[in-house]
Image (cartoon, rainbow, N blue to C red; front, side):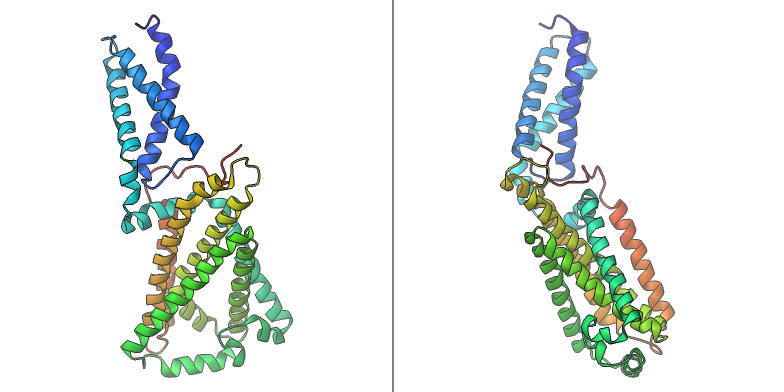
Length: 340
């Protein structure tokens, strides 16, 4: 029998609230797997709350608290005992539209680092082209150093709209596989402690910056924007997010400030890494389709203003998706490694 009901409720509520918070996290992300300390804490909170519920049934004066604890214990029981079945089911739609934007927001510092490395590369590419035009032979790729932007524009506009559907589909498939290879390589280089990921992001930024500076300096900014924006507003963020995954992996391997074993640190980020890779793949599939079937059409077939508008709308939609996509709590930002 409980001798002091008021003291019982006062001491129990913080534990019930903590359990409810963990249950909500499990409900919002079915693929989340707790670390050993988290699982131990969850087991304790569940047993303690179940015991409190049994003790509270002797007091008819607390029906609302009893109902609350009954619901909480039932939810915790379902999440704990049905967890294996929930995590084994892969749901691509849910993974992309809910878990992916949450994972991006949850590791904002890794995203900021990835973006900073890319921007630094862009600025270096711009500066090198402006200060030393001959550096184009070292900084540009995909044959852009072999001809001037004006020559490239004339060539592209003269054959715009002349593509064959089969050839376009093949080109789109090539773009998807190429960009996925670049993204997966950027992420996998996180195995170097994140150094390789930063180098890859910086190099891609250098290529982008030098080509952009070359086209703008040659008076072909409208063509460049109409050519790059329709697919680039999705493709470039996808590669940045792949870099985010690489930095997340690198941080888990280094484990700075954490006393957790390596396997626990990797286990803590495994689900988010898979989610980020899945999301990046979805973005790159869309970008490949747009680049293969839309970006390659230039004036006079498609006005550049239409293509630029389309690209900017994509950027707005993608930004809103990453900022607000997926209901519920994102979980802690910052270091993916649990604190000591």
